[in-house]
Image (cartoon, rainbow, N blue to C red; front, side, top):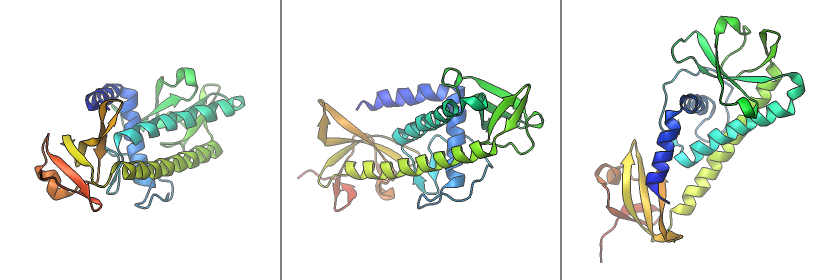
Length: 240
C-alpha cells in the first residue's frame, strides 16, 4: 500500500467542509457514547469538542481505515433509512453546530442525490427538543422532530461503531506477526506508520497504521528505523 497515496486522500477529504464537520461530529459521538469496552452508554447529544484529526475513545484510538469506514457506513445508514421511510417525507439530520454561529445547526438532506447539501438553520426555528443527532421531517415550511426515527438511527449507528471497533481490533491483530520486521515510515500524534518488510502485496510492501506501539520506542523512532514483533510486542531490531 502506498502511504503517500493514503495520506493525500485523507488530506483531500479534510479539505471538504462537509466531511470535516462529519468527522468532528463522529469523533464527539464516539467519545460521548462509548466506554472503554465498546459498550454503549446513554445517548448524550452534547457535541462541543473541536475537530479531532484522530478519533479516540478514551485511550483507544481509531485508525484512518476504520474512521473512513465509519463515515461511509454512517452515510449509508442515513440514506437507507431515508429511502425506507420516504412515505413520511424528506428526511433531514442535524449533524453539527454552525461553524460561524453557535446558535445554529447544520442539517444534511439524507436523500442520496442531495446528501452533499448542507442547510443551516437557527436553533429557534427548529423544534424545541431538536438537538445534534435528531432526525427531522419537513411539514410545509416547518421542521418536525421524529423521535422514533431518531432513536432508530442512534441505535443503528451505535451498533455500527461497536462492530467497526471489533473489526479494527481483529485487523490490527492480524498485522502484528511474530518474527516480522517493520520499518518506520512516519509518525505523529501517538501513531506510527510501518512497512511490514516480510509481507509484500502485489510487489508492494504493506503499510500499517499502528496505534499500540511502545512509548519508549515511539519517542526515539525515526523514518527508516526497524523493529521486530517478538513475544507479542515491538522490539528494537538488531542485525545479526
